[in-house]
Length: 103
Image 1 (tube, rainbow, N blue to C red):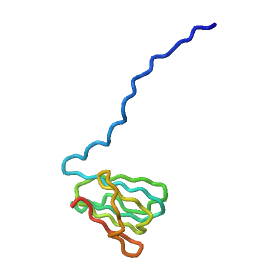
Image 2 (cartoon, one colour; image 1 turned 180 degrees about the vertical axis):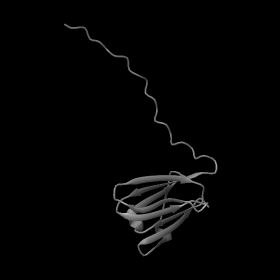
Image 3 (cartoon, one colour; image 1 turned 90 degrees about the vertical axis):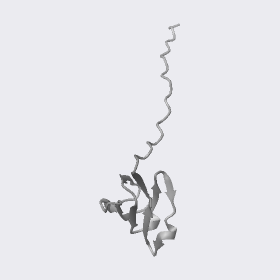
């Protein structure tokens, strides 16, 4: 029979944990379950994201808090701030939502 050759197995390296936020910075993550117009503005007034996002898209923006997040169809987006899911329901009026994150 032919000799069996075994290749050395590389040690498994754990996946890196999400990098800790840079001091004075924050990160907003958005996951879309439906089409949703979105605008994210950081604490300096800089618009980090503005436009229509499509179902299935995932977006992450970083900047200086606090962030203002505006959603045209609040049920169409899941918002997270620094890795923690944020419940948009208390900030929703009709179909739209306006959240302040990182105050």
